[in-house]
Image 1 (tube, rainbow, N blue to C red):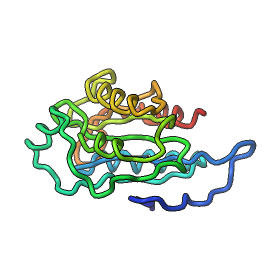
Image 2 (image 1 turned 90 degrees about the vertical axis):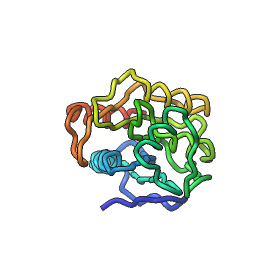
Image 3 (image 1 turned 30 degrees about the vertical axis):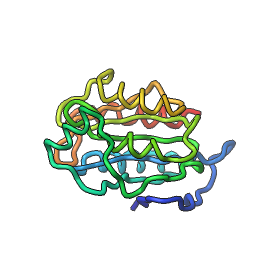
Amino acid sequence: MFRTIIYDQQVSALKPVKGRGIMTIGIVYYSRTGNTKAVAQLLAEKLKQKNAAVDLIEIEAVKQPGFFGAGRAAMKQIELPIKNPDVDLGKYSTLVVGTPTWGGCCSPFIKTFFSSAKNIKGKKTSLFVTGSGAPDPQGKPRQMMQQDLGTLGMDLSPHFLGLKMKNGKIIQGESQVDPFVQSILVK
């Protein structure tokens, strides 16, 4: 269905929409339980329906942390090792970054990935989070990602998607998915 890529590969060739070139979007996400991955795939599907070229880029942990270890690492923002550092994101016009919430914070794998990713400065970037509770749209995970990614020079969108999830299904916030997708497509 979708390509999940780890390292630089060619974006699928799609026919351009009349009057404009194809938007190339990289959806970068980390998912411990599969909830964030399910949202990344949903966003990719909706963006492809709008004629965007989309790649899913999964951040791969060297070792999956346990429940308590994950929460501790997130709260202290301890960078955890990943299998795919130094990814070149230069071919994407837009990035969408997704993370689960752990202990009310974003996953530290996001910080680890972007601290070594290449060609991210100035990239239009939209953010989404998933959690077992309804994420506060102005809450700590959003603020953490905005601070970390803004410091790296990424152009952060004011639009944000926070979803309450259970077993790969959206429990709360589904009505915000389409407006979020539309905000990604605005140049």
